[in-house]
Structure formats: C-alpha cells, structure tokens
Amino acid sequence: MGRLDARAVTGAALRRFERRLFLDLRRLEALIRDSRIEKDVYRVGVEQEMFLIGDGHRPASKAMEVLEALDDPRFTTELARFNLEANLPPMVLSGDLLSRMEASLEEVMTLAADAARRVGVDVCLTGILPTLRLSDTTLDNLTPLPRYRVLNEALARLRRQQPYSIHLTGADEFHATHDNVMFEALNASFQIHLQVGAHEFSRLYNVAQLVAGPILACSANSPLLFGRRLWRETRIGLFQQSIDTRGPQPNARRRAPRGSFGRGWVTGGIMEILRENVAQHAVLLDAGDEDPADEDPPGLSALQLHNGTVWRWNRPCYGITNGIPHLRIESRYLPSGPTIPDEVANAALWLGLMSAFAKDRADPADSMPFVDAAENFFAASRLGLSAEMTWLDGRGWQARDLLTKELLPRAREGLQRKGVVASDIETYMGIIEERVATGRSGARWILDSHERLENVASEAERLSAITGAMRRQQGEGLPVARWSPARLADSGGWKHHYLRVDQFMNQELRTVHPEESVRRAAIIMDWGRIRHVPVEDGDELVGLVSYRCIIRLVAESRLEEDELLPVRKVMKTDLVTIPPDTLSVDAIRLMNQRGIGALPVVKDGRLVGIVTEHDFTLIARGLLEERLGP
Image 1 (tube, rainbow, N blue to C red):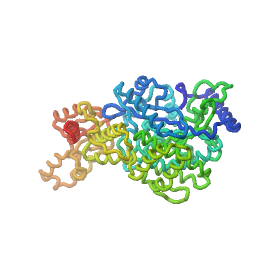
Image 2 (cartoon, rainbow, N blue to C red):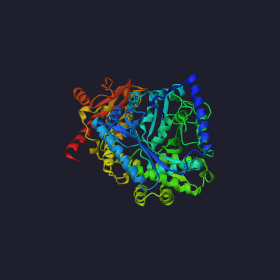
Image 3 (cartoon, helix red, strand yellow):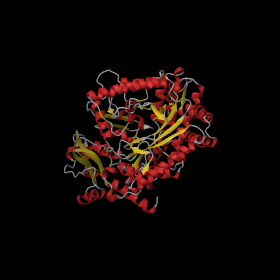
Image 4 (tube, rainbow, N blue to C red):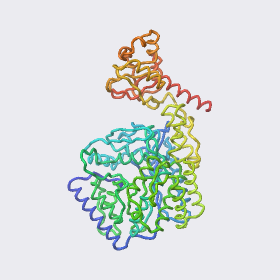
C-alpha cells in the first residue's frame, strides 16, 4: 500500500499529489511507447499472509513483537496486529521454480513460527481464522503505524462517516454494521505476481480474469466467519464489502467499488486499467516526497500508491528489477493455506494456465462475454467445486469436470512449455488432481469437521478444534485432501478457569414476547430441546421461562385449563444476568450460589446469548477427553 509515511491528503496537497499522479501516468505511457518495459522475461513473486494465534487458538495481537524478534526485511506488517506478511524475492518461471518456492515458503514460515513462539504465540495459514470474534474488529487491534490509521480515516471520510454494512448469506447468514475498516483484516491471502510484457498485457490480463473462477473453485479455504457457514471463499464477499467507500446509495447512480473483479475485458493494456483507477477513485493517501525529476527509470511512487488503494482481484503492477522497468499481474484472490504444498499447487495451476493460454495467442475477449467470467468467479466464491461455470465453448460445466477434462491437462502443458521440471509438475499438479477428485478443498475439510463436532462440543470448542487441527496438520506437511477430520482434543484443552462465557454461550436464541402464550414457550422448548426461553419486549430482556415452570403448570393442571395463559403470568422477572467477558468459573459459582440453571448474557442492555448447565457439561467432557483420550 505504499511507504510507511503515507498520510491523508486534502486541499493544495491533494492537488499537488494529483499532478504527480497524472505525470506518472504520462511517464509510464512513454516507457511503453519507447519499448523500455522488459519483455520475454517471466518472473514470479509471492506474498504470504498469516495469522498469529495464542491461547485457545484465538488471534494474538503480537505482530510488532514478532517482527522485532524476526528482524528480517522479508517480513512486514498488515492492517491488524494479529497478521503478518512475508515476501519472497522474484524467481524466473522455469526449472525447479515450484520446489524452490515451497522451500522458500517453508523457510520464512519456520522463521515466523520460531519468532512467534519466543513471544508466546504461533502462526497459522488460513483465509479467515475460524476463532475470530466480532470483538476482534475494534481499532485496538489496528497495527500501530500511521498509514493504517490514516487509511481507516480516509475510507471513513469517503463514506461520509457512515457505517460499513456487511451482509453475506450461505447455509447461515451474517449481517452487521461496523464503524471501521477492521473487517478487511479478517482476510489472509496467498498472492502471486507474474511479470509480463507490455505488448501482451491486455491478452494475459484477460486470461487471468478467465481462469480465476475455476482456480478459486478448487482453492477455497474460508467457509466460516464468526462460526457462520457462508461462502466457500467468504473472503471475496467480505473483502469487497469491508473496503466499499460508496456507502448507501439512495438513487440509481452507479459507482465503481474500490474492490472488484472488474467491469469488462481489457483492450487498451495496463494504461486502460490505471486510467480507470484514477478517473473512478478518489485519492486516499499521499506518500510524501516527490520522486527526483531526473530519476531514470522513474519510480512512479504516486501512481503505485494510488494503484495500491484500488483492490482489484487481479491487479496490474509496475516495478523495477535490475534497473529495468517491468509490468506484473498480481493474483490476489487465493486464500492463505491450508498448507504450503497446497499453496504452491495453486500457484502451479495459475502459472500453468497463464502459460498455456499465452501460447494460444487468443484473447478471451474474442470468445466469451465478460459477464460469464465474472459470474464464474462469484459462483466459485460461493460454491467452490460445486459451482457451475460457462466456458469458452459456450457450454455449461461443473467446476470439477472443467478442471479435470480441460484445465488440468492445459496447466501441465503450460508448465512444460516454460521448462518447469517434470518432477515438480507431477508433484504439484498431482495435489490439485487429488483435491478435485476427492472434492476435499480446505473449505470442504473445515465444513466437514464443523459438522462432525456439532453435537459433541460448543461452538467455541468446535472452532478452536478446527483451528488446532489445521495448525497441527500444516506442520505435518500433507496436502489438505489427505487431512483427517478435526478432533475435540485439537482444541488444545479448555482451561475452564480462564474461559470466558462469550467463547461458548449459545447465540442462536429462541425468545418469546410476554404477551405470547405459555403453550408457545413450551413448544419452543420441546422442539428446540432446550430448558430456558428468554422473554423479550422489543430489545429489552424482561424475563425468563424455564422448563421447571412448565412442569409446575402441568402438575397443577393449569396448562390444560388455560391455553391462553400469557408468558408474563409465569415468567421469572428477578433475573440474574452476566456480561460476555465473565469467566466460566465465576459463572458456575454464581449459578450454584443462586440455585439457577441458566444465565442470560447481556451487553449494553441487550441480550446477546445464554449459558446453561448443559454448556458447562460440554466443557467438562472436553476436559475429560483431554485427560483420558477420546
């Protein structure tokens, strides 16, 4: 996103930055016109994002401490204090590139893990950390560097201080409003850069757009957000909404989002995209001093900073290597994890397809409507390998069939064309082939593990166990298609004296109104197999109906005598409630002292959950399993 001294820019400073931006566009255009952009050299670069995790496999806000322990220029900060990024030096696309990429990633991840453990935490590769909670999205977790604070303020200014609205629907639904940019920090990616020539940029950028859908379908690894089962790659929808500067749109005016797949095929090279970025999106930040007037080749710092604040899933990039300017396509949609071999296999698939379609010298724009490529991408985001896609032949394909019959053979061909060694092709394409054949992507493994643990653990335990199993099996080096399901023991052992109730409370609440019938409350208990139903009048918690109350009514024959008996006549109103950050040991002690079987959990005067005797039974089961084995 630019240099660390990036700052907000307004007034005369804004106009000066815009002048630099237009000058950079002209300089880049001249470099292309004068054939000074490097060509026929295909280098590959990688950015590896990761989460830091601590007790209970929860996010650990220790990025600055880990960076200090690392003291390695390959590592840098991300938006949140529970994320880090590592950057690999560029490598030429040939020979043993893929195995060297894996070795380099293993090296940096080992260094990161060692440094993290020295400050009491660990690292995890995943698109969205399953154990994240809404409370992790406060600005307390914003990385304490000026550019991140300024970015948050600049985005808020463009939204006229209106809250962000996040709404995603899958098997479950998530809808929230939020007052800062921290939802963006819930995403971790594995980003790949491919250097290409200026003369072929339009065609290869369009190829990158074309293949994004099927590649994402088999690479999805982010199906959960705060325990909700949403898209197979929830990052896509979450990221686009988390940095959307448009705010509510009360009229029919159409404005381009800052994060998007794009609006059409590219015909005018990289300049078309960069001009569109400048024309459609306001300046957010200024990087400070101007580039030297005699700098050759020019750094184009203003253009690079602005381009870094427009988040296309395939982003155009400019850079300089060995004193020679070049262009790159950055693939940004792939998730972090689930393992390094899986990530390198995803890279192999992308690089192989880019090479194969480059050989064809055909432009997808001549064969397929852009809307089909965009729909393929979002279908893959939502459904993964179950998605249906339209391809160049106009046919509808199941993603798995398209990959198996059409794209995997072409990717092998493309890697061979670049001189990638046969053993690497066999290893990494084999990982993709096994993943597609079994249907076991990272997303599928997470969902299967979540379902398997559903009836034996609380939600927080399930999410912790999934994260723990993920981290354990990442260390074993097997690709995700060969992983075993998560076990309750993978949660790492619940230390119930230090567990907060918001880590295991039931948030899927069934409530009644005080004027509704007691019979309705009894039916809710019976159908939901629960013993306590909170009573709400609007947003206010006014009472609690218990199973004991219903039994008492039956014993007194009152329930049969008066089917219209309102809840308010029998509900308990002298309620004992607790806040979400109550320790479980304190909650247990309170329940014993007061002789009650349930505690409503209240935050800011509103009911947010309920914790019962049954929840503590599940914790005890987890402790026994930890000590005695499953």
